[in-house]
Amino acid sequence: MSNLFSAITIKDVELKNRIVMSPMCMYSCYNRDGKITPFHITHLTSRAVGQVGLVMTEAIAVMPEGRISPEDLGIWNDEHVAGLKELNEQIHAYGAKSATQLAHAGRKAVLDSAIYAPSALPFNDSSDTPVEMTEEAIQKTIEAFKNGARRAKEAGFDIIELHGAHGYLINQFLSPLTNKRTDKYGGSKENRYRFLSEIIETVQTEWNGPLFVRISTDEYHDEGNTLEDFIYFAKEMKNQGIDLIDCSSGGVVPAKINSYPGYQLPRCQKIKYETGIATGAVGLITSGLQAEEIIQNERADLVFIGRSLLRNPYWAKCAADELGYSINPPVQYKRGWS
Ligand code: FNR
Image (cartoon, rainbow, N blue to C red; front, side, top):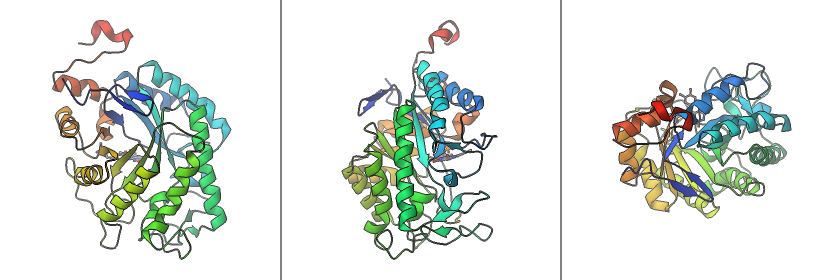
């Protein structure tokens, strides 16, 4: 019996195990049009073949100016849907569920065009200074998340995650380090949460499937959001019907992070216990035993695996072997799997 390989149902979506491929930018849209390429299909489908329960795409930009780099995936145009649909058909063919991570990079976009943020503060000395968003620009961006959700639904994704972490646009609104606004979107934590709150509300008009949010639960700065602030945000998200908070950290301002196995887990666990919302654990989770411990001790509900899955598309199979647990291969591999 393995808890890591136990199924979980979120809304009406059943994941066959608790292993999620963490979103990872591949900077591979060489035409700079945001469209899926054969590489993305091979890359993501191979993890479905490798028996990951939920395969999540890299951050997918809801507006062209919301890309981290010009080579990022995009979902700002109806023309993006066909390629994403093909991707989902492939992922589903091997028994995995699929997710995409709707994103806007805000001031961390590295593009030739103007960049936008809640306040006109550059990320560091070598970054461009962003344009402070007007209320009209804010509404346009919220609308772009809604249209992204509609397209994600049309493309057949099972789950949507909103990227509220790593110092990208949503995170820039949440953090007092990057949000110096004096209107209703800045100041108090209630006001700083408003942008995310309105995105969730409008996305839910198009999407009634499972909705996750990734947040940075530690800003590694004395004047950043505190754990209590994140617990407040998590409670609000739970009240709004968010199904899971994916607990990452950092990226808001330049900071040195002391990372070690499971370093983001204490805050993930705290948010889960304080609010009762399901959480996802991520960050230097590298072995089957470590992942099993997290699920078995109810420290999180899902484990997100990043770099280990880059190194080994069969990480899930190896984790099962490590735990002495047998998992089914795709039918085509039955004769050579064990
Ligand atoms: C990332 N990460 C990341 N996170 C995210 O929320 N959206 C993204 O698009 C990306 N892109 C990305 C690209 C690459 C190449 C790496 C290595 C990482 C962060 C990733 O999802 C994960 O949170 C971290 O890598 C920590 O987990 P691991 O790698 O220690 O398992």
